[in-house]
Image (cartoon, rainbow over all chains, first blue to last red; front, side, top):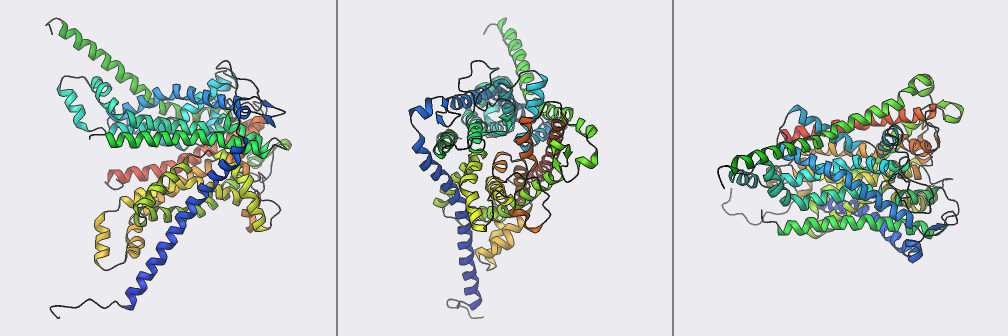
Length: 295
Length: 304
């Protein structure tokens, strides 16, 4: 073999292989575009057609004429009330559960049963949560079709999202933080509550928001537990029914003949704005604190 | 600190430590309690169906509850048809996108793609259903020259997009877990990047990709609102080849559409809960399989 070879001549085979690669990469790009462009189209068309419906009366008025005119205020309020009630119930359980899993639980059969339960909860179809809420909260506990029943159902549904996000945030806090706290004579709880929890807080908040965002857009679990078809007044007690944005959108796009499309798009837009702004908030919190984090 | 106060403080913190540990333990185990409660309540309301309706009727082919025909076969097959069509669409699309994001895309493209896919995961299913009704269904009707655009296929397209975020992110993790040395070895032997991807990286990640498919499947079979709004809700047996392009009705849509109108405690009510039990068991098995695959990987030090 010659000691010094010139540049190797490019064989026909190599050329062919690189041609295949170029075509292949182009196809992958097309696939990614096929995934992404419809998302942009859906959001874009809802924004463009929905914005025409948005005005003071639409946002803050009561529905009139069998929902064909007027506003969606009760549905907006209903969604906000439901989301907040769900948060109040699910945050203590979710964050507590995450603290247990990350700080206290050892890898035993019993702990693994919690993980199994979480996997299972995450997979249960939303409409089955609705059935459960109907069976347990509405009928068995006698709450009736009410905000309490709906919020309890939604809270259980959102637990797996919250717990897994919060646990991940807690586990990301370096072990040294805990050992240093212990070496200064802090008890385990002091270490958790004063050192680990504050450090993990941004991550936990992100997880909570992501969980609640799902709650906000859910329709199936509230169908039989809280949602009112047409109720042009605001809820006054936790045992009231209420309208809600996702259910309202379902109703006006399938159950009301002759519904003006403008109002349908407007309702979809309001719901989308709620969900996407929470999404954005979660992303901002995450990236802001990730940049500031010193470990 | 005086000698007297120290034991008191220690005792107090030991006591509060105990209390807080007990509290978070309860919070942790509550999820087990919830799963058990969900299953028990489904059984409580659903099991009577098996006594009230003869099995032959229950697994028959005719779903006409007003005439006491509770054949769930068209609903089960409808769910399977829509779900599998959705996976057939979303698997290649999802894996290709994951490969693109992970292996090919330049940094800026990744920065745009990933948040957009997250946004897709956040769009409420009722909004997608609304879009499916107003835009997708008419397009499909015209495109296929069908009398209606509300078909199993329309539902499957929506479901495919709803399953995509799950499939893409899990498949991405799986690709990420393939050791760099595999790629290096393949490239060093003169393989192109493209050959490395499809002959080395993707095969090495195939169990993770399988997990992605199963999680997507679980998500798709339980989806309710979008499917109910666009599949046309005709409880017919999908026996002919063109069933995909005909209206269909899924288990989830049946529950959502009919539960509001049945009398509590009636046979119809019990049967709807019975369908709920079936859905619970199906998604439980799918997710169990996916989870055990993930846990096994983690124990062997893969996937991470």
